[in-house]
Image (tube, rainbow, N blue to C red; front, side):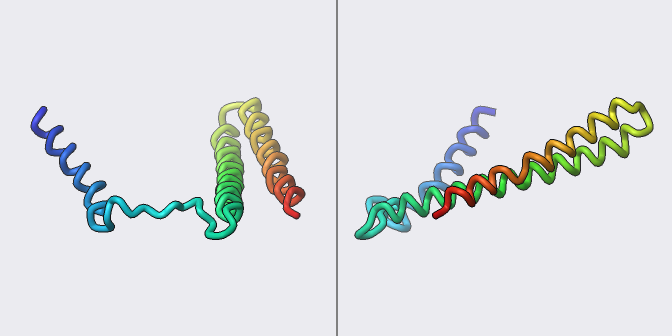
Length: 109
């Protein structure tokens, strides 16, 4: 067991170190340097992060709507309280999902 962990560690290190050796480990390019204007790189990084988060919010909202729909289908056979809870999940997912996008659109100049 100890031998297999050692082999796994060596393979993992080789996987991560080999690209560094191939590219020259001492020659990293700063991803946040915007050339002559450093604010461009930070601005691009933040826009990318915000875009990713908005996509994540949309995905979670869609997943909540699907989950609520499945609870309606499954819960309709068990009790009315399950159906009411599922409708509440769908309602809050629909009401909550557009707000992050609206706040983003308001903040963009």
